[in-house]
View (cartoon, helix red, strand yellow):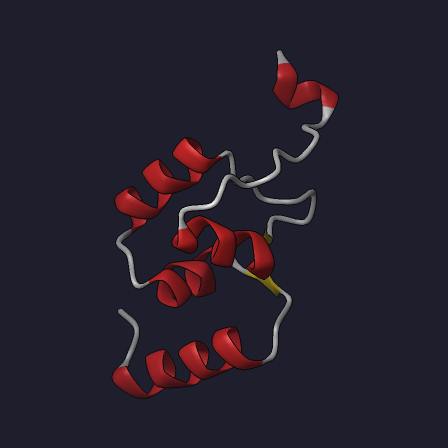
Length: 79
């Protein structure tokens, strides 16, 4: 379980500084639960990059309701 102080610190870092967010930070940034976030990502075509991070700008577009540019998937995930 994440302590309140850790949550505040992670939220500040996610919102202010990082261009790429870890999945946990992306959940905090969007203020959504894990299932809701996964559904929205699927709906808007938002995927993690090869390193497992989400692009902050793409998350902001998703929150505004804009269509996110679909990232090119690696060959192994296309099948």
